[in-house]
Image 1: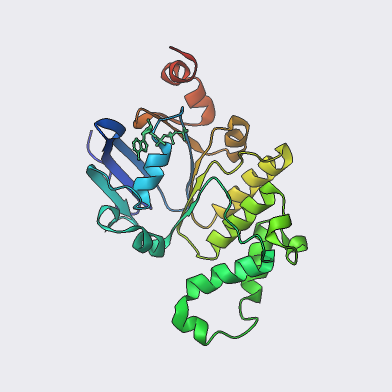
Image 2: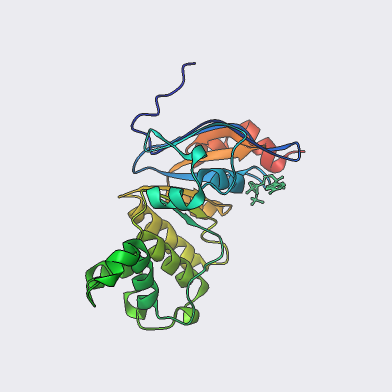
Length: 250
Ligand SMILES: Nc1ncnc2c1ncn2[C@@H]1O[C@H](COP(=O)(O)OP(=O)(O)OP(=O)(O)O)[C@@H](O)[C@H]1O
């Protein structure tokens, strides 16, 4: 089979391998995410999901393989800070908001981070207000904008952190287990929130919660032993005997 053309792709991984002390955490992994696509990544513990995020964001260097952003930017040659500046945002599992600042100030700080020191010097008070209000709407927190981030529920902290990433206007958002520890209502709302966000950017979500993955209603990729075992709709991959074996067998 001929290789797919990376042109017009948002993220292109081809033949990516990473070993730790001889153990292959990623084994010839190939994956394509198109602009404006949301993809769910599932797989048993140790399948390589976190390592995949690490090689995309420059935290771990692949031993071999191609990783391209926007069709032609080689990420394997870049460091973490440069990759973030390109427009790749990563949400880790644990929220890391500034607990002793208000929700509003957390977003204001995130926007200041985007401006950089020079632009911040000439920044007009209140210039960010429209942008902050718009992000507050997206993350379901307009009514809580003046409370301290530390007083939010766990789910709301996750949404605030997503909002802080949105302030950077990423073209690709990588989200690691966003609904772990959330209530059922927060989990359902997070699926709606991510679907809205994915209307204007690409999103890759790693998650174990299958109710949530069903709510996302997007193409699912199953990783196993560092490569793609199966992909397609959740119904398709759930019926794949290889997937059933990996999750239930042995
Ligand atoms: N820095 C490292 N050094 C050694 N081994 C590592 C390192 N990082 C990951 N591994 C190993 O690589 C394999 C893949 O790990 P990874 O964390 O990517 O899996 P995962 O799919 O994210 O699993 P989980 O669902 O449990 O988070 C595991 O066996 C892990 O122990």
